[in-house]
Length: 446
Ligand SMILES: [Zn+2]
Image (cartoon, rainbow, N blue to C red):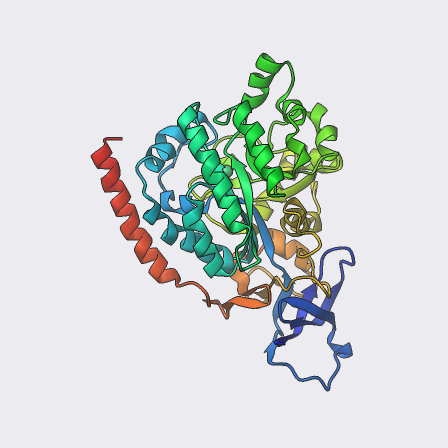
């Protein structure tokens, strides 16, 4: 058994107990947390395989980025001034590139994405895209925990529907036996009613049930789905999804900006998570999601960065800050969300969305050792005696404070150095990939 002692740091346990130790310790045994407490109570006689001096460090659960599209790191900078939340904006900037890209272009961009998440304190993420066969090996190598949703885009083409559903089935079959134990396959309808028909959704639901997993979708970026559903089915999108039995399986719904208030109570009774991604929405000129209202109604809310064409980074600390500020801005109430609540959304909220609430999201004996260390000597933390650490995490520091990242008891970042991925090499390869993509685009004349 491998044992690690993280000694002398400020420990934020979060979760049910929600304890804070000013000078605390964490003991990790293999892939799990074995003990957490105050250093004054640390048994003196025990010897550990690895002992890390954590004075000046804050130790907390790793963050859960609940909505990403990692291969789209390839397109960073390609959608400036365009909203990807509209059909035209998405199709004319991103879809045209997706139509000429090749599978071998994907891995380096996924490696860049994973490395940036590891560097900024994310330990679990929920991805949604096609080319999942290329995504999976890179995520496995990265050491991150992930829910990988195979994205289905059909756009009314029956051949695409049949092909994509077949690939989705094969992907779920394959990943179900992945040896890492950290990866789970999900079903990823790109967007209901926009480019996934009712028949496709019904079949996606059956596949989710067959493999005992959930659906990771986009919903209510505008009132587009609700208008469509009211016109065609005489009910809102959420009611139609309920009608189709979509909520029999867990559903993670990215954006959730315009879900009618009359549907909040229905969704609160379902295994439904609203994943807010404020950077992408703000840059797209969309509204702020009603986070305060949805939480008050009992809906689980998590936080995601979305793609980095409309964000453009993977730093979930910056995303937490926007969630907090936008809530006050939208409600016209100072401190509409407590800093602790926002951190809860980015940890336990994401864990609940993925069905991992018994495994991650808090530092408690028995949970998985998914944690991060932050340097409290850097900018944004002072004055240390009076600047509450929760407030600092949400309002004055960012992912650059993260020095170390552990998932499943394995270090993915030590002293700001990646241990599982070669970031400079991935960036170099990505540079070559994007030049080739531009040539392919030119040849295709799109
Ligand atoms: Zn998205």
